[in-house]
Each structure stands twice: as structure tokens, then as C-alpha cells.
Image (tube, rainbow, N blue to C red; front, top):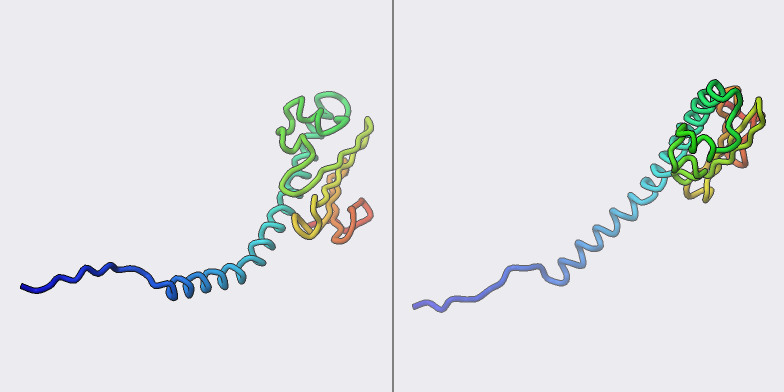
Length: 144
């Protein structure tokens, strides 16, 4: 009768250490690209949000014979969702100013360099402007 060996299959500590080192290396190479993709997505969301504000503000003007006084008013009349109506969305802060016949809205990164790099601006003209270094205005470059 043969003696039966009781062996258990598994990984050695050295093998696990090598696998962890490989995972850490791949992660460290991918992390900058993930951060850049996140900033880009936030900037695209900010532009889309400004387009939304532009559209719903025109709807509001047609319905109420003037522009909304603030984002909260656009939210309370169900023109905006509560997230954008709060003035913060996807790493950007939205600052809205209005008079009866004019309005403007700026979108600035909450944490510049982390949540976004560019600043945006739109007013009743419908043109969205961009500035890479400071708060945007109607004197900056229009986006395409």
C-alpha cells in the first residue's frame, strides 16, 4: 500500500508579492489617464449643462416674459433638475446672474486642475466661451 501525500495547492508568498507588484505598476501607469478622462468628462458635462441652462432659460422667458432670477427658480418651475439647480454638478460650480432682459452663467471647476482645467461662460446670446486660466467671459474664445 502506498503512502498518500496530503499536498495543498496554493501560491507562495513570493508569487503573491510579484503579482501585487505587477498590479501596482499597471495601476500607477493607468491612473494619470483615468484622471485626465475624468476631467475631460467633467468639462463636457459643464458645457452640456450650460447648453441646458441656455435652452430652459429661453423656455422660461417665453412662458413668463422674462428670464429666471436664479437657478433655483428654474428648478422650482421644473425647467432644471435639482442637481444642476443647486449650482454644482460634475466637479463644476455654476454662477448665474440675471436681469429682466439679460442673464449670464459661469461654470468654474470646484477644484481647478483636479475636477477640470477650463472655465466656461454663456449668456442670452447663446455663445459659450472658454478660458483655460481664469473665469471666462464674453471677451474670451467661443467654443466650437
